[in-house]
Every structure is written in C-alpha cells, then in structure tokens.
Figure 1: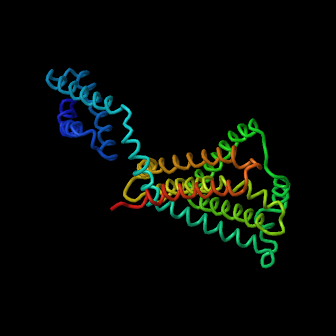
Figure 2: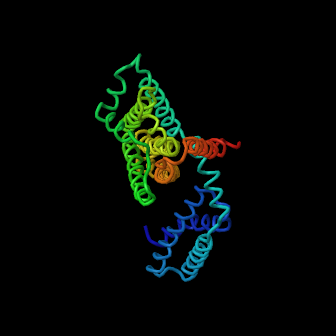
Figure 3: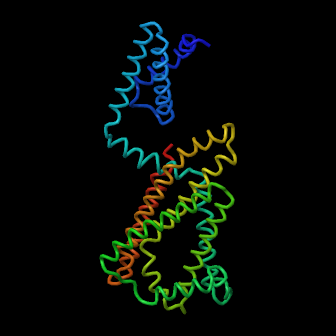
Length: 317
C-alpha cells in the first residue's frame, strides 16, 4: 500500500485524537491511554508524511495536531493535588476492595492464620502441632531472641529500620513472584499463614514465658506487615490468573492490561511494608514503652487500614 493511501486511512484516528484533545482534563484511564497511543501514532504519521514529501497541507495539519497534543500533555504534567487525592483516596481503595484476587488472598491468609494459631495454642489437644509446623529449632530461636525484653539504642533502631524495610520488601516480592505461577503462589501464601499463625499461637501459651516479650515486640507493627503480605500475594495471584485465564485477550495483552491494574495493589503493599518497618524499628523494640502504648498503635493502625480499604473502598454506587 502506498504511503499516501495509508495516511488517508488514518485520518479517522487524527480526528479522534483532535476530539480527545478537546477534553483532556476529563478523560478516564482508558481514554487517556488511547489518547497517548494516538499521539504516538500521529507522530509516526508526521514522520512518514515528511519523508515521502506528501502535500504541504497534510504535513502542516499533522504539525499543528502534534504540536497541540504535545502542549496539552506538557500542560497536564503540572502537579494537580486534587487529581492525586482522587487517585489515592478514591480509585485505589475501591480497586483493592473489589479485587477478587485480593479477596481470595485475604480469606486464605487470615483463615489459615487463625486456625494455625488456635491449634498451636491448644497444647493439650494438639501437643506437637507447633513443633511440626515451624520446627523445634525455630522455636528455640524464638525463645532465645525473646528471652529478654526488646530494647535497643537509637542508632541501632535506625540501622534495623532499614534492615526491616529490606527484609519486608523481600517477603512481599517472594509471595508476589510465586503468585505469578498461581498454584505455587497459593501454596506459599498458605505456608506463610500457617507458620506465622503457629508462631503466634505457641508464644501465646501461658507456660511460654518468652511470649510476653514476643507480643511486646510484634504487636505494634503486625497490622501493617501482615496486610502488606496479603496485598502482595493478591497482586501476584491477579497477574498469574491473567495468563492462566486471559479470556478473549491474547496472553501478553491480558498480562499487560492486568499489570496496570495490579500496580496500585503492589504500591499499597509497599507503603504498608514501609510503615511496618518504621514501627518495627522505632516503636516495637522500646521496652520503656508500656504494652498498652504499643497495643494502641496496633489498634490505631487497624482502624486506619479498615477506614482506607473498607470505608473508602466500599462501592459508592
């Protein structure tokens, strides 16, 4: 096909781009994606028109169109606080609240966590459950680590906060990456839930003296850290299902589309891990803080999470 004929066929795209350019400020996510795609196409059309020396009026029209769109895009790059607030406090929580993969991850993790903690706590009925689930060696490590009250200097806390950020991010990336394979991801999530639950249940036993120090340390940062694990697993599972069951789309296109939807979930998980690391670094290890203060931090964190993901996330229509 001749270049002139090709460009003539693309006039409909030019007209569509002009119409979208008139209402850039009110475009939704899909329309803005289409707007960007058309802009890249018209830039290629302009290059073809100039290379093949097409009629002057066609080249001039494409010059004006690309210039107009460029100016709109450049102008829209200015920081818009209201748009940022809308995304953070409307779009993201509602997206996460209704996401089926996050709901599945939430049910699996907390269901198995509570079950495992209960079984590990009931020493008389299930005397060997905790040892079989997390191993005798790991139990001895926990008892040794929490034999004394947690207490560190400010410098140590700063170092450990960065370590916790790195470590927590690693946990999130692990459950996320395994989620891409779906079944291994579900297994990894279930395994984490059972082991963490067993650790909590064992340390809650009345005869485990180290349990007091254990809960003195984990209570404050627990809500943010465990929520981040669930979100990471949900994002990985979502991406995994995009290639297992792509629907009417090609697998690559399905993963590309779902990947954009999974980004806010991973972003929220990263924020949760960061907050958990800060609390774990600067609040959890202070023995001078009474337990009710750390419990208050935990309750406040839980209320904030419930408000963000449930109250703001609940469908408004």
